[in-house]
Image 1 (cartoon, rainbow, N blue to C red):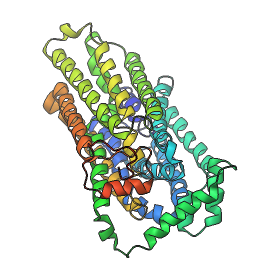
Image 2 (cartoon, helix red, strand yellow; image 1 turned 90 degrees about the vertical axis):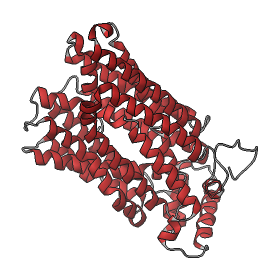
Image 3 (cartoon, helix red, strand yellow; image 1 turned 180 degrees about the vertical axis):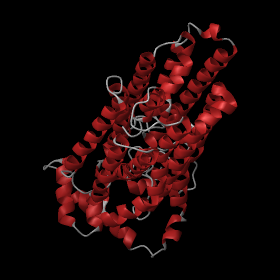
Length: 449
């Protein structure tokens, strides 16, 4: 709901004067941008917290800044309070973007790790859809109250969840780790065997020659994993997804303004776009452990590219002669729906599934911090440059630029991203350490791939 807030709130605050603070367009763009700034700032500290405080405690800690962010946004009396509120929300969003996929990756059975991992993006998209939908019937103040109430529900509910078994083992709590596995898998599972295997893997790491953090990060497998993850989050952001979502209502208003359609039509179109995100992520949850990560990413990038090309063509024709697209106002809605559906099928959930899979346990926290920092720093850049890009390149040129980045993303996945479907963490590390190219066909039974 933090990510979805700006699309419905922007027009209401700027055009209808809702809220206690009168904002200019530039001030609202900074209100939007302070969220990814917070996400970038918290990336490295959150990595340290995950290491020292554990996964569960880190997630619970950020309930407070998230709640305070909604409080400040709701009762803001000055623009600086809105900036601070969004910054606090960004701290929580950045922390959860990193800690929740790690938490899921460590509690899920490897056979369904991709499916369960996709639930992070599914809930993110569902939160945005709730924001888009609820805003039709309520004002900004009420939307903020509803969003804050969700946080109040989350905190107590998550207290019931266990710490991850691997984190408990690292702290020497083997009995608690077995209890956690039984809680997660059911009382009839062979929890002792699973924990024993986990402990053997951790001891094997401990028995390796001691290395400094710098040397750990410079191993071939970590460098390749970092290249893959930083590249994925880079192309995720450069696809234009956050710019599209932050300004979805604005884009659809511009696209349908030739017939002076009323604002409700734009809000309904935004809800349709949000619904397709949820549909795409649901499809991903059913396919990610069947089709594999690489194919989902590449097909997602190619279709996103085509969607941007269509949007660019539409806006180019609209600018030249609005009459010729008068009967095609459904086209930008369809193109945006296809874009967000395919994004949610591949580039939306898969990078956050893989972030919990590709890093060795001794470097996972700091490496995930670096990838998360890159993601939110680029999100800030995209949210602040979207309007200047539209002013400089035009709507058409901006979408064609995004389309070019999507196509480059498909090439990047083909060359540099390994397949992790159905692989144990040990197999993934062996594959990353190998010099074999990722696009070679895997041999049947080859555990290094």
